[in-house]
Figure 1: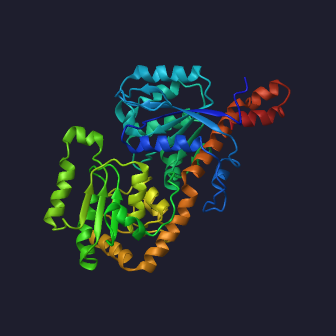
Figure 2: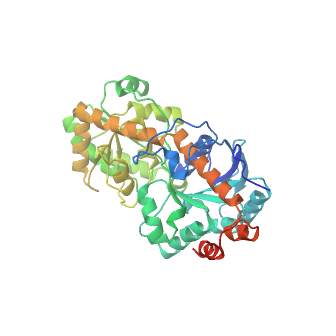
Figure 3: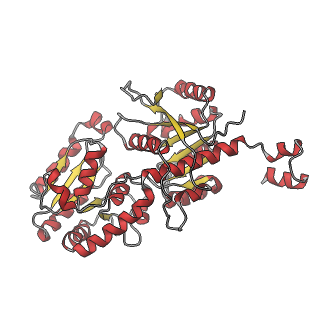
Length: 432
């Protein structure tokens, strides 16, 4: 049977999924919605091609999506979740693969992050990929510059089992061939999607979040060590000397895994640091896992957005992408994704661990409206190339390409049908 149905690609997505609270769950949900949505008007990339040009042409096909939710818990999942995969149960991987093989799916989209699958470094994901007969497109959310041998092997094997692998940044794409021995021909860069929110004056939104008239700095995301929030808090000591009524909002619930182990000890440590620095009037914790509409209000209300991550390797940050797409003045430490996203005047990088430099750049954006507006406009313009409708169209076109490729007989088979080229050319194609 010809499985290529250009007007109705049917995809199964494997990943964590709401109501689970984690970044991959949000990404999977947003991407699934975008893939099933309408095709946007062409957007232009930095190389002046439409975003879909990386996968061979405009996205015209529609798609339907079902979800395989990775979760130990029985949750009240929405209707699109057809199967649940318990990460620490190897038999579940084989059972899910069998169900997907026996159902009329055209492609399986696997979201990969080491921590969401079972076994050391999430090695159980290979049980699923080894058994799948449906073409696989894997999205790598973490591509480490210095992996362990085991991590390197896992990503290498995922690459060999996938028709395509997608990464969310050029930095990640550059790492895959030399470090993980993944064929660059199967690698695609499709940016992290962002909400398509209007460009607004923050002063018009601040009253909605109780910050009318206050210069506002924002960070958001699930709280946990490794986000570098201590650096941003210390930076505010310098900011308030220049901007006495400034407020730094830290929006987000504690990561559920951390909360189950340690309760709110990390949040309390941050609050203790705030108290020690005498910044109680200037730093506001919003302990909530908010919906997109609420998050959008906070983003639109902020003048400056900060990501103070301490690690240089990070190749994607959904929070930074969202802030850029909303048109914020951005200040960040120079991790890999920030260097890429904030290039060409789209924000300001500061050295790791340098709270003085971070405070100075935040103050500059808060006090220099011209600089702030220039950075905001550049960020917002770049973000139009990353909106979820544009990203969904890119994935939809990639899925159609993979399905069409899977439906095409290999060159050697064409030769036996009298449709191939000369034997020497067939041999070269087969072995190359």
